[in-house]
Length: 376
Image 1 (cartoon, rainbow, N blue to C red):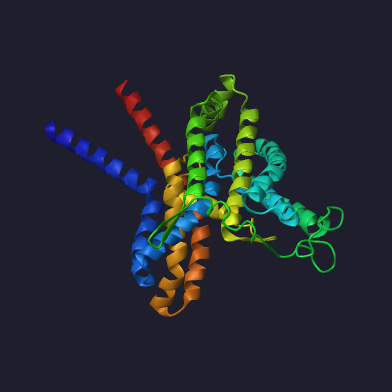
Image 2 (image 1 turned 90 degrees about the horizontal axis):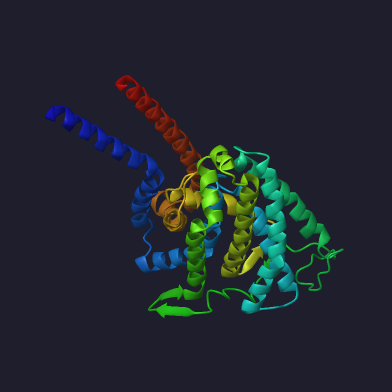
């Protein structure tokens, strides 16, 4: 009897351990690679800490914008690029009007909010028609919206959309230049409340804004709308039977995510100080999704801790890999190629592990039901 109990306990412990390893396979893999690459890069701890802080405040808002659609069962919102495009349009107008600093940032957010809401509404309506295929549809929507964005920025601005600044317009008289200098708004939020600890700079104002968004997400989960989204994410049919307006709730989730991505892109670009007019938004969805997945999230489960762990691990790899590659084999380009490989590879690996884990979970449920039937 004792032997059987011991063997059952052992199987239970091994099952929990294997489940823990499977659920956290991607973060564990990145931690192992980072522990190998950090000594090879020969960067000082102060340099790494400062670079990580810069990337944390630059990217966290964007990654946080992915959480609400996941709660609503819509997976990773690759269509967040629609919000990023809206943010860039707001910044272009504000730069043309020569409104600098924090007033310029706030005005860019005000201008881009209705554009982001419209984009989110359009996106949500389409994703509601593609239930079960939201991620692929969102990715395709991003490519489709890129064409409309190019039509507006490359042909509309300077022709029928007035742009007065010659520094923004191409020499032909219409279309925005490839790079827009945000020197008047560069680090406007980051330098609002600066704290210097030795050689370490802490952008307190940006951290406070990110913390406010985290508090909002925690509060929002407890509201009726947040609980409705959670119910839809768990089982859409049951939620609909309970009287929840599923389509409207999913639409609100995507609109909220798009507006958050819009604000996140403005924070991201003020940190960099330059808009790459035709490319800055393209990889935002993939990079944000990859960072979230690196933090241990899945397409059906994500929380705030996954965001910060993912941003730290993902961007730590971005910082150390070029120099580690150079010191290891004499070529920094290997590190650059590795970064691109990691971006796409981590999404593929995470989705495969998630699908495999779901298959195993269903298999365990079937075995449990068979056991119950046998006992009955």
